[in-house]
Length: 184
Image (cartoon, rainbow, N blue to C red):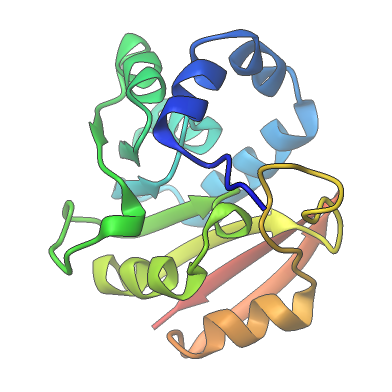
């Protein structure tokens, strides 16, 4: 299978109609608002790994937090900077074990299903902050249904992946998504 998850693919996606379609999904708004509510009221640095045109970063900024989005798509980072949210272009699959930024909380939403080696992204997240949030489709939108998804998760497989790096893993379902809150 040809992996569509490239910077060029997402530059075209986030720079085109995909960006508008993505921002119209109100269920994803509710999930992002839930995550920001769970982060809490104390101002913190929020690192969004693979954030694209991050909803969570947008709501985090509105709540008074300091988000930073990391993505390999220049179009996504340009879109975030256009709304006053800093971003860095970086390919998470090529992580060199250095800290990308200081963070109190890491967000990694809609990323793990796109990555060939999700274990590396989970390790990266654990290296950046003692607390994180992950989202993945809930036992749907696998490779047979979505061309950019390389795997399908259910609560058990997500817990198994995250438990290897986090002491506490709390998973809940919201709409068609799993939301995992993890702490060291």
